[in-house]
Amino acid sequence: MDVTKPVCCTEDQVEILNASFKQIDSVFGENVPVCAMNLKKLWCKYTCDPHQADYVRGLGHATKMLDNQMQTLSEVRYYVDS
Picture 1 (cartoon, rainbow, N blue to C red):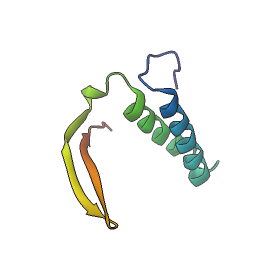
Picture 2: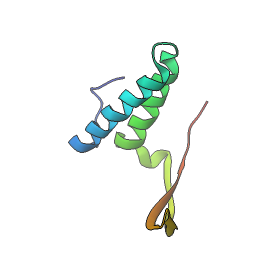
Picture 3: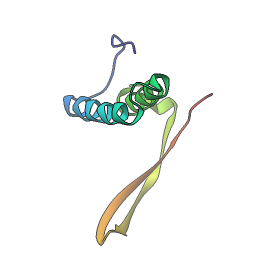
């Protein structure tokens, strides 16, 4: 992953990504490193890419009762290529 490209992450988002990456590593382990790297790239771009408007579209918000609590949900469409 090229760490010299500009990003729009905050320090908090970087910490969340690092924690998420550790979870990905615990699932995939050493057996499927390509799958783990692809998933990491997807989450990193979704969170920190300054050009995410090119492939992520917000579709709206809704407030619903989930697990006996009111939750605000966001719906997005994420475009990927093969």
